[in-house]
Image (tube, rainbow, N blue to C red; front, side, top):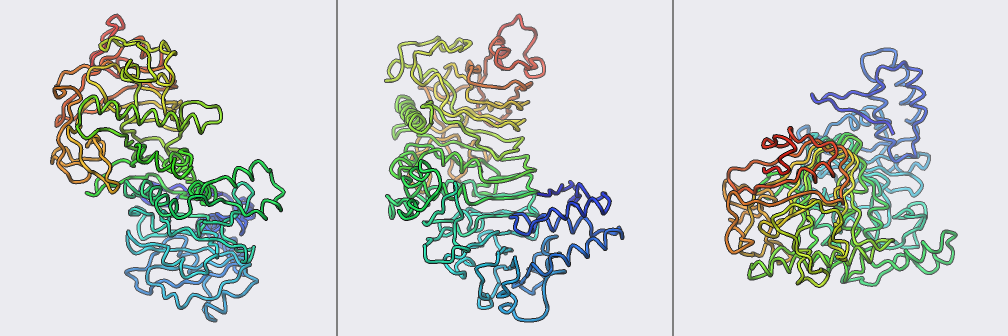
Length: 618
């Protein structure tokens, strides 16, 4: 796969554009028309040798002629210059590969072609769509006009079981807003029912784990965004996709399985894997096929941002409330798929640097809003998560190993990250002991609570090798109780920023389409604190986690548990927000040095004088 570097000024620079023609010719010789990345790689090579240097001209001509007899390009997009999309890939295809003679139908039924490229947009007259040939590979280039445009309107014009090898999305600009369903890709209509009476050459849903899936499968198996540098999407995009799949298909086909009996009999593959696939529920099968069959590739994408209803940047919404957990349990679907989807696991983003982050939604309140109900609600929710983890992990570990971010991410944030807090050791909780540490003392937390069943362990263990900067907001539970950061296994993390201001609400409200009660931090949802509105445009009151509201000057002891791996972290920073009440953290120096071996105390804390002081107050 040949990759392209995009300079800050918008110009394109290729890592091999100064090589001699002989070397480039060898690179071009590696191009495989059957590769799923062929069009992107081919365009990169042609563009690299298409500059003013004359020594490349012969090579470019040879390379074009080499594939001209194998590729057919049909352009059914608008003739309007105002709406027509122009990108390097489209320009090369239109310049060198569109035939001027013969109808689209005559050209497309030519079975000698190995690949057909069809370029469409929202103005395409679908009556012009020609007859398709099973033996010809089809790449579909879609140029949406609007944020709410959908590829599914176009896919409906194809035969029901016809597979699109590559769906390429091209736009006028390098920065795009993809709405809530990514132009129809993250939509239930993107799936179709397969059958066994169609041509095996064009059957939807290639093998996942070497097994042909005959049931509900995606219409396209490769989604490519070749020119996009910055991608914005609604913060409920992935959450809505997961929820709608379970709502639309879980009730209709609750016991559907992924394999036909005759396929199992004729399979030469591992029988344990076959049995595992056959026992999949409908929902698990859909998520499994989506993650295993559909690959996203954005070679130039640098950032993914999530936008709320006021067009402000916020975080991706991850619902791990009891309501969502019950959905997964009812549909017999492992919860690991929720984390894999939110992690963008099937996205290949070689140049990704920035990801807006995630906000977790727990059962953060009860109807009365009292402290006891609040704590009990979160306890039950977290206990439910532990039960899921124990049931799903191969080694029965009571925690999930998660990635949460696209591979390669360097800067991001986590909001409502669950700490180890004193409520987990409350004697009133069924899985606790009578241990009740001094709430105003910071300990080393060196696994002294091993007799507690689960709650000396994180429910989520995050691992991301590339992350360098993380902003972290802990889910607050009790005033002045010791809390411990846990579950961060980030070997490359250099800077950790802690959110130390409080903006939480004191009365519950109905906040989303599921009529669930939420008492979340409104600044965490991307709120405009100055204007006094939360992410849904509702004026937020404040929550008192004790009898009185949190006051400026409240001290919360904080530390790091042994359930972290932060060998490179040098600095701890803190957010400043004059519009909200601020929590004063107190750190124990021995705890910091034990779990952050490279910590720069002087560079992290203005109040640090020497290690003789033992504690640092921020």
